[in-house]
Amino acid sequence: MKVCGVYEGKDALYISRWVKSFKGKSLIEESKVKELRLSKMERVVLAVPARSVLLKSLELPFSDAGKIRGALPFEMAEELAGEASEYAFSFYYIERRKSYSKVVGGAAKRELLERETKRLGLKRAEITSSSLAFLNSLMEMEGLREDTLYCFKGESEGVMISVKEREITFERSLPPLKVEEEASMVMSFLKDNVKDIKIFDDPMMIARGAALGALEPERFAHLNLLEEGGVWKKILKENERELKRIALALALLLGAWGVSFAIDYRSTMMELKTLERRIEESYRRYFGEGKVVNPILQAKRKVEELESNINKRRSSGTLPLLILEKISESIPASLEVKINGVRFTLDRVEIEGVAKSFEDVDSLKKSLSRAFKSVEVSYARLSVDGKSVSFGIVLKEMI
Image 1 (tube, rainbow, N blue to C red):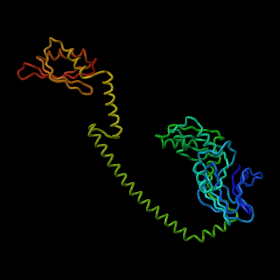
Image 2: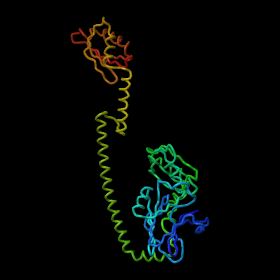
Image 3: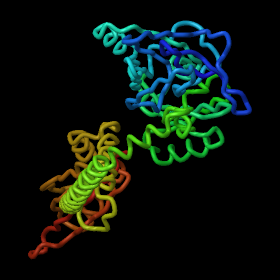
């Protein structure tokens, strides 16, 4: 496994590749493909197309003997053809001082890195790595979907990614054996946003070092100082009081944040309960009494039913004038009936009128049955003087 490393000589700091054997022994590669020599007081930005856990300022003390002082956390398993990607870079600002070198890590896109290096007047070196292969492969694919979780399984790590408008919105590194399990878990939590999972088993699509920092933080979250342990212990002891003060301040800050969060949470829950009560009251006001489980969903369904009935009536061409015309055509000229009123509702037509006898009401019902599928007499009452019968008829579904 070829890894980009930082080591020092008597007069300068060097950046080159080194080899970690399978037995765990580290050796500097004899033929250095990439080497950057920094003289005293020089500054350089090393732009590496990979992710990193080295996101804080560290110092590399110097000694007379040339030794490896630490490894930057990315892998050089294979060289990637073409230019380095424009999507993501981990970068390291390295400043060579008289007694030490300072390394600061971060992350940026290509255009930001180019602008800052130009503004500061810094040198720049790019080391192309296969750790960006999975990003390049994904971004070059056609038909990327926002509701799909893309998973990659390599020999040593796995990666889960989701995209939106060709931008990575979610990224997680994990062991390859847990890709399916974790992907299913993410899909269950984000079921409204994630509808499908695509898993690629091709190890060449995985940047073998892209998740290295996340999978093995104990190896790459710090510099491997071989002979300076006593110096660091001395520095920690000298600053013990200040460190305790900082820890106390952080504890107080976290405590205050916890109290504030609890108050905000309680207030939010009270507002939520008030809102739920108002929604239920509005539902009952417009849709009547009954069991209310999910008032928003129930109201939506009732509105959909109403729209469906309205559309059904419109599509069948059932207009009030047409209904009146059918009623008029259905009443025989020989039948003496007086229609006092016609009332239209969503699913029925109600007729009220006066006839001479109950037989005339029955004849009117039979006549209307030829134009409507359902004809029912809602009431028929004899007048006080016995000379007329008032009636009501309900019509449904015109033929």
